[in-house]
Image 1 (cartoon, rainbow, N blue to C red):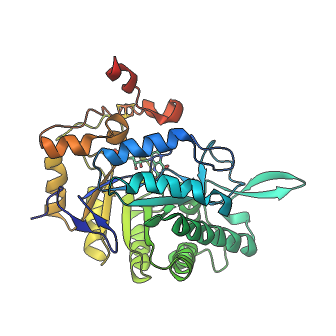
Image 2: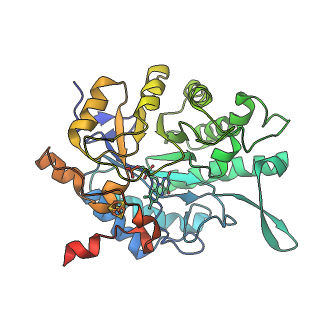
Image 3: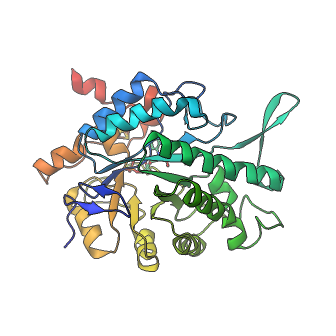
Length: 343
Ligand SMILES: Cc1cc2nc3c(=O)[nH]c(=O)nc-3n(C[C@H](O)[C@H](O)[C@H](O)COP(=O)(O)O)c2cc1C
Ligand code: SF4
């Protein structure tokens, strides 16, 4: 019988419980990816709140990634001390931390300006450049003391578009078959394993793109199997339509569970599922009715960073998050109710 609140080993990381903070982009870094005081505050609060492990928000591998403002970026060795300080703040609470390595889009320099280039129009040299950027960011993550890295291949950001048949129509070694489209992920994984050794390497992947001609469950399952065979340490299952609105405890929680359960049957590495968990009994039901090992949370921890702590003390407290998604539009992606709570 699996319990949420029991220690668990997730391929070379020890966690005090089965809850993971799913990556949540805050938009508070400096233009060069530097870590701000606000970030130290947010991550300290999260770590103190009792979650088993933390995955950072979207951390770009490129300086010339203009997809979002104020992303963290692991792009320069000079930033390593700042990221080490962030890791230390989290480790102080006995909480492992994984850097979510991501690329919003690939930007090519043309006459001194940077233009977005989609997977179909990239040269093989540019693809190899992206692969190197992910590997080098992982090496920096290791130097900063992170316990692992997550390859962000979900939600139609660069890697998610690259592996999707609706975006990638290449006819070379990086396009066409499922194997060719996912080669970029496998080469990133192989490079990280070679150069950043004992880091836990996880991937966040779409169950489905939920668009006509996009990645669907059968193909996503095949990609998960390829990653598993190549030595990925865990897989976090998500999907487009990422943050479903109107989630109610015991009514419509855990919207990616059916697919994540299939992945967990098919692979040997641990599977993490994200998406709409708001009560302990639902999470324990999922853990016990499937081979899923971990549950990850985003909005509930924006609403209450200490929800895990509260749950441990009182297993019946449901999340106060009402899944309105208004945090997507606030500075730092703060929950709109936080200020009200303080009054
Ligand atoms: C404000 C906000 C920012 C997010 N940023 C990221 C991100 O940086 N990377 C990512 O993979 N997912 C991101 N997500 C998606 C969440 O990690 C999660 O997959 C989704 O919200 C569903 O889980 P939940 O119901 O626990 O919120 C974000 C979600 C929100 C609400
Ligand atoms: S604004 Fe607050 S209540 Fe609404 S979805 Fe975001 S975290 Fe949940």
